[in-house]
Length: 313
Image 1 (tube, rainbow, N blue to C red):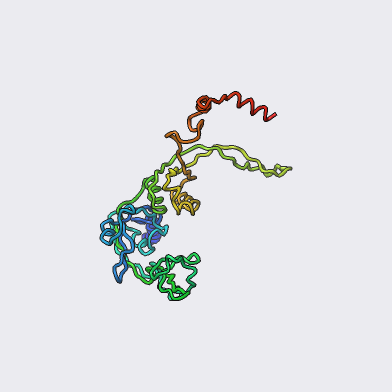
Image 2: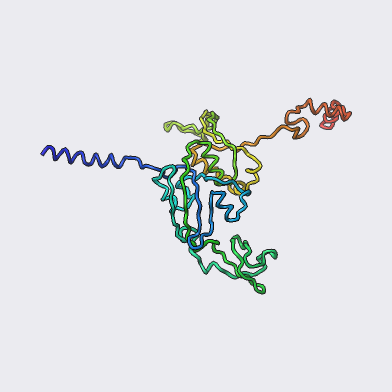
């Protein structure tokens, strides 16, 4: 009887221990470098690739972008969900091939998305079959134009196409700076210098009042305290400041980076200086530099000061 009782007691403990075992392989939130090539199933049309040779064979101008494995964050929708699910549990060096249905890739083809519009909504330079046009905020392809009417297909160009996705997990990214650079490159398609710093900053915090004490004025009281901030610095290069995605959505991008990298704040830092740039007396010239230039121009600085004082009186 005692043996049976002991067995009954240990079985649940064994089950609990099994439940607590961590899942092996990559999971949601992991950052990996992925090499891949995606083609349509029916005609083998290239959809996307990280392989420069594959792109060159397809006649793509390979000088227009950087090639190589891309950094993605699993669970953030950076790749097709079906491919992401296939990566879970895998290790560095593992490969896979996933067929993504048309519905889960670029959507099924919808005849109702082919609509007739007035030709006046289309720029004169784009009034030919096959032209990519934008009408009322929607992107479409011009099919035909007859008289004053145009037939435009607003479906995605690959709508109705299943996609075969071949991939290899090249590496796991654990370095924080490499993570930040990879995520920014994925979002903005630019390479940026980034670094992290732990900093002590002063903040105003609300003082919690004693419940037994009543504040007659009812005004909140604040105190200055020092707090540690984990800060991500991003160098503000011209490529960043002129980047369309950055200009349109910097707040959303910063929020995503804050969550994905676990930082307290993000500072975009711009360095200005050197090369004699700026106004005289600024950027290192000082007031001495201004006085020297006034002397060269045969202007008496004291006379100017007296005139300004008299004008003020």
